[in-house]
Image (cartoon, helix red, strand yellow):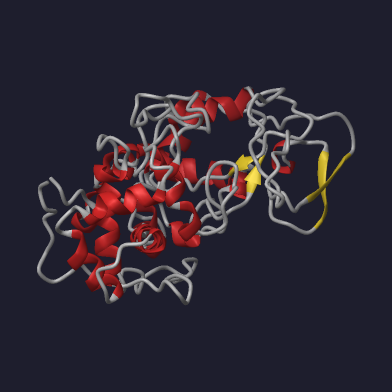
Length: 354
């Protein structure tokens, strides 16, 4: 097997967030898995190594492609044996800022999340962790990488998870045209981008996608995609699915790259997404507060959050955005300013086997 191409001196993953904006919480991992340059280097190799799949055909990077904002360009990803995933692959952006993972928020830490796709019977098929360890022990370049990362060459499931978590935690993105604009009073924006930003901030969009990370922290929402959902979405703290169509609110950073959109990849473009919000929100009985004209927040919780208590004063009535075609185009222009081209082109996040 070809060895990964790695620099003699590891890339700097640890201090990447040292120049982060105020909204960014510089979280470098739990006390037993603090981010290190060698740990993230190992995680990068594991992330792109197809050895982690049952038949050596799929890696994490197969469904989280840099050019697509570390998401998949297909509505459903193709697994190791050509099976299709049940949901669209979520993009990887500022995972350190998140408190829940997957569309249904069933996992609460990166260390617990990263091996779920590896072990999934459709995605990568490595349900037997012993088999995975045996495979990696046969790959000559892993022992020194594990030793650098953890002080000894021993390969364990926990160390694999820790390294992957470190790499993903290091993948920070806050260098877009929008971020530059914040320092320049948005003098770098075109008129359509300025118009789109003003619309975005005046509509319910900003209640779930709050400027900063623009969502993606861990809150959920029912946005009225369907009157009745076939996919229950959110899992409660007991691990049971709640049939109300709540799904995790994704970050909009790099959103122009991450089509198709929604948990089932039903929308092919940002224009389709904005048009949906403009005129096609369904009157689902559990429609989240910002999108229901007849709902009010009774107590606590973030907008769209499962902890928010909602009172309804009448039948579900979706909000009316009343956008013109030009308005829709302007909002899309604004969303494009959230693309961080340095993030998706950074060598330290790229495939080391190429």
